[in-house]
Length: 224
Image (cartoon, rainbow, N blue to C red; front, top):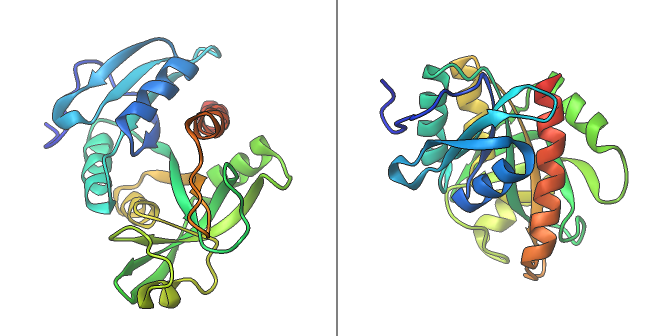
């Protein structure tokens, strides 16, 4: 029996992972026919159902930060999840990317304070399919990201350490990629830029539009 999740409905072998429970509901309503809540324990809302293409899919919130995401992924693996795509958010490090852009993660570096670990690569097959599904253009780009144990703070000594060679910062992707390798779950990630390098924040409409676009791409890739 999983330690954190308490599923009340079946969990699919393919899953979309989001941090925010509200975004899990948004994508469940957008991507699934008659979504069924599959978990509400600990506020980690999860939904399962069938896509318009007829494929089973679970959309599960992972909470905030790497430790919470790792625990949720371990439970999902125990419940039979074998492939997953994170649809998350991030803060831009450089002036580009812009608000609302989608970053397809090639690799993520785990950072604690000013100490960083080796980059963990995303599953190459899922990542390649995500890039094909989303297409090329200014608003979609491949990226290496830094995953932090706290929120990104501009102009801090820690930021100077991890900013080199990365496009954005988040709080989960590196942990999920590493745990996916350990658990035998193929993981990829696409992140919405919700804060610019200068501190400007995306409004709700822009965030929802970008999250839905990322969600549709993730669903199509997981259905293949």
